[in-house]
Amino acid sequence: MSDDKISMNHGAGGEVMANLIASTVLDNITKKSVNGGISLDALDDGASIPLGDWEIVVTTDGHTIDPLFFPGGDIGRISAAGTINDVSVMGARPLAISNAIIMQEGFPIDDLDKIMKSLNATCEEVDVAVVTGDTKVMPQDKLDGIVMVTTGIGIAKKGEVIRDSTLQVGDKIIVTGSLGDHGMSLMSFREGFGFETDLKSDVAPMWNIIEKALDVGGVTAMKDPTRGGFANAINEMASKAGVGVVLEQEAIPIREEVHAVSEMLGIDPFEVANEGKVVMGVKADKAEEVLEAIRSEKYGENAAIIGEVVEGDYVVINTPIGGERILEAPIADPVPRVC
Ligand code: MG
Image (cartoon, rainbow, N blue to C red; front, side):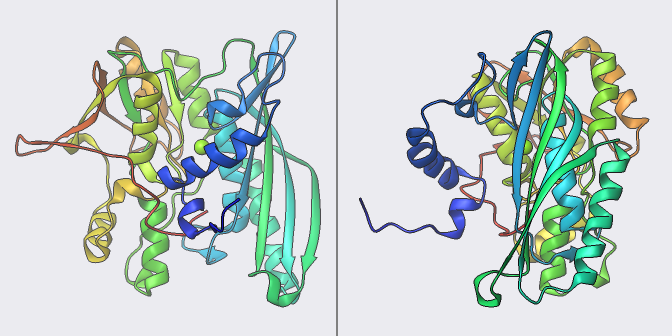
């Protein structure tokens, strides 16, 4: 036993959280997979349960975002999209979500109505059902507003589930659009200068884009760069696969406004959450075709090939002036309560 207590960093998606999960959750759970499916130990975006010719993919997410309504979305949209995306990046067609709502006594019913309409509209974009849920209320001084927990179920043909750990040397790295929009817009909104820019969250369901990419083929690995941002996602993908990645800075899409806000706040846009983006490894001979397919979809217009997988141990970025720097995984997301 110890007197150690949970800090905000323990929920921030970086190394501190990973260590906590390893020492508490993983050590205490004995059965972590079913039928040889993807287990809790994999710490992938979701797990899988093989059944006959199919694999059921399941994932779950708690949402504590502050504020509840922000430029580009709200807690309803992020609750649906976040879970749908974790299923989708496993290469599985999302079918349904469940939704548990825990509210503070005094929470406006009108706000709950808006949140549920938004959650529903997000599900409709990718034809996902809301099949079950739960509603709880806590006393006013025990909870801040509302917390939503969504669980997602999807399906893939057996053996066609895509991991975040399977990059191969020679693969191209594709991102489906500009990086840093969600974290930077949320931060600038909180700091009070959100009104002066048209920067908004990218929160969106990614299944339509992913389905197009899978139809082309050649996708070797996928991950959604949420907490800890792109820096965390690409480092996790590289280290799990035991490979290096070389990126071209000039090819990585980042909005002008994101650059501007990131300089004002001193926060790296690669280290903040994205809620409507996918990082993919794609076989080199399919990369251009996959890119075209993604760009033809809503939310995929700014997709780009940003680098490639090499033998090595690091994620390296080539800068426009001919230098290079190592992109490390952040210790924690620099912006708390982003999702
Ligand atoms: Mg994820």
